[in-house]
Length: 196
Image 1 (cartoon, one colour):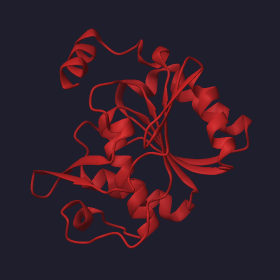
Image 2 (image 1 turned 60 degrees about the horizontal axis):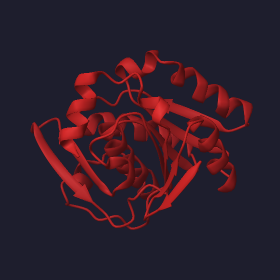
Image 3 (image 1 turned 90 degrees about the horizontal axis):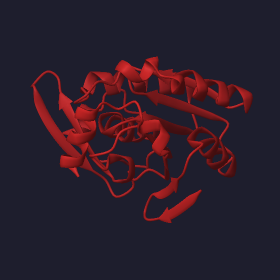
Image 4 (image 1 turned 45 degrees about the horizontal axis):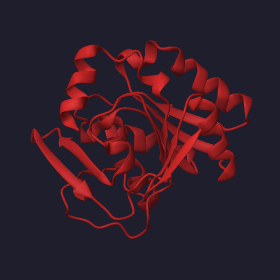
């Protein structure tokens, strides 16, 4: 395992799920909201393996799998509703840039008790407290969202993409396991390379 410390701690190496569990144990996390990217990722072994790892390590979790590419504010709000009922210690995002973007907003909304993230995304309200801690697990590369503080969310009602950034919205740590990217299509890999 190799580590690189920026604002977000980068944990690089194979055995990504085990690395994630170790980081969660260091932070004494025993409850989390898992925001797992939808689509094809739900059909990979990672989907079952990560849930099993949480259960085996007595980490309570609720899950949201409804984030799509170019995430909508209503998707974020659906995840927030789950989190508000569950009250997790942390948000863990597994997927690519869209999922990580949505998870930053979810973490901020949960800590500030916002049921609707739209006014925050549009810059009409400012957070009063820092977001819940966030961890990311990268399964695709390109946007850099897994280790920055920027989110792009589409306001569904207006068909408008809004960008927001807050100095406290950096993930605490990000898991980079190259084996988790093996199922990414050549097209997506090339698109991610151009995005970088």
